[in-house]
Length: 111
Length: 116
Image (cartoon, rainbow over all chains, first blue to last red; front, side, top):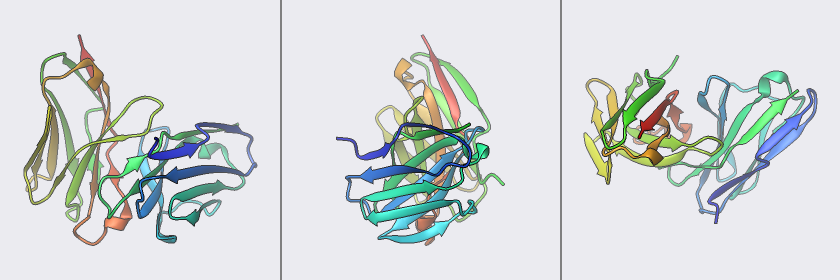
């Protein structure tokens, strides 16, 4: 049973499109995150959600919006996709801010 | 401004020898440190962690050392095995400083290659 699962694994789309990446965790964790790994391989946090409340929001464009229908899900919506959005996006979850468990990643390619 | 630095992009070690991966940090608020292992096309997997109240934590072949005064930590893998070939990320969080909700700050990673 996958602890943190995200779909799709690969996403190729045209500039200007709107897309979503889904994430689900079955660990009962209280906090979920979205991280972005860019072309330089840096893993940087984008958002975190705790009990449906957005805790932090790094300086990411407002075209990116996290949506959490419940504690086990944190989806990432991206509007008006740009070439620079191409990256690998990782979902993660933690309990009481201990070790984070990561999903397998979604490689987004904007053409 | 990189708050967690892994200055070696890659490291090559012979099978059976010790692998030592290094990490430096600049933020004094960091008090919990983690190492993650990542294979291609997979998400990072938690390996081992250490709290700032300790200077060493051991788990099987993996040992993490923390030198708070130098703001330096290292991961030792002994003996190194072919399956250890992966990218290793150092990460830090101000867990006890009240900033735990900020998520992990990662280094850029070190690609460890174990040679037979």
